[in-house]
Image (cartoon, rainbow, N blue to C red; front, side, top):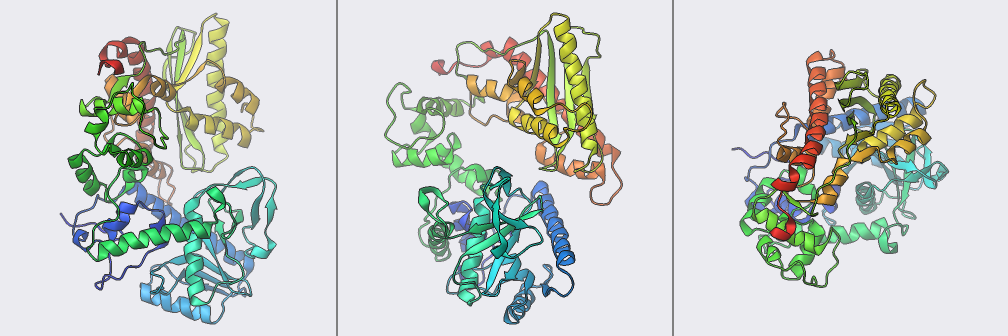
Length: 560
């Protein structure tokens, strides 16, 4: 098998250690592997199509932003635009020429390597303020939430001197953005091109209506640290790891399973090592795994051998209870996906029941509300029903599809109560559905049939709305995760599409609506509807199984 290399993987022949901004936010072990010459020919996981699509989306987002900025500022504003597909050496040369002439705006800058500082990198935009350059990132994620105080300018105002506290926004926590700005600040500083008297950088996000300005020297991080202080600490750590790896020294970072592993191209390599050593991080979260190792509990076997009734060793424990971790280790050794935490499984049931599953496209909106009506006859057709818009998001037609869903849902509830029956609705992880229930009410409140936020709140806070994810969390220990795709198969359910998953559905959606200028694909629309139908059927199968079979088929934790 040939190696599939990531852009940050390959070192120069001289093994010079150069870190990009992403290194300070990546797993420490990954930094080691990326700089270990012995790992250069090790095959990596194949590229993730969903990740590739996100990269393509980010590229399209950047191009749309720069065009808007150039149109707004006019042809004589002093723009230098450097194509990202040029060879690196040519991009660096063009960037240096633009810096030398103090161009007002430099788009697509790739800074010359900072050999002394071991840094490399570039910025979507550099803005000359008169005193020097400040970096501005263009990212495809949200950078603010509702609140107050975020220092912003309108998107077309790229002068940080004009920033003011925004009464309607607060800064969303995006540590990687600040780490990248700190990295670029240090690179500009090394070139003598930073402002010098202040460390500041901007970010334009998915909404593309404001620039959020970060003061990198302000003590906004935990413990009163600044972004620059946090960056310097992380960079020094990653540099030491990378240098040791490049020089063949003893590794300064050993593998440990963390959230990042799910999408890391190096996971196959680390998974083999962790499984061979039966590492404790296979069953507990990364921070807790480190605490256990410090206490001498380095393997699943050692954790499973402890007594849940004993006091845990002194440590900073963050996830669940220590006793639960011991049972999880025993479940892992017994190859059990689920173990009961409670003596009796309970799921609230109704005479009339609706399973709900929503499909969204990133932060752009919810294009599909799927439902499954079962139970007593109330004069409405039972089975699966979908409420969708096939206009590319964002679209006002989303209001129509949501209003139709809510009208149908409301009628089911009203007919049920009028018949003197009980009503229950189910979803798996209400955080997603609740977000778009409230979001739709807020965005489309003027559209006929769209409920008020108060009406949504009354429903989601009632006993009628059941989050099966919470029911699973409260009543089971899950040794392989708690996702619906993991839990529902234990209940005997199988998705019809072997590629079914949230990431894959993003690609299907693009084709279904012709998002990239193509012809809308009816086959992919049908695929999305089938996938959504299977999701609601999975929640239906799961709650029936929890009611009828889980009690006898899932071992009780005290019996392990």
